[in-house]
Image (tube, rainbow, N blue to C red):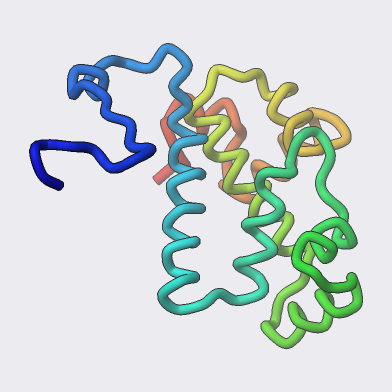
Length: 155
């Protein structure tokens, strides 16, 4: 634009803001949001599978209760039966996608937040902390405490 003008609706922030540490920064949430943005970009470039679309819908709804397949189907504009059929064609099941999202979020929460394992279990919709501990060990081969201490899965 001429004379250093900003387009209508543009927001200009000083560069000094970029270097300030965020008091409420959530690296896990940032990575998850960035992954969603990357997935959205890929959608416009290449298209997405039903499984990818389901995972994108599940993650933001994981707030103490795992979303039901019916809820996700409605968000995708289909029926539970139609969604189940589409996932079967892709060789996956809703339960497997839910488990995958839970494991990814669990890893991020354990590694990147100071939340207690009880709070993480609640956020991810587990019935109790021991069910979360058992699932975490199945996913990563170690306890959440060891994972947190090591900064990731054991080598």
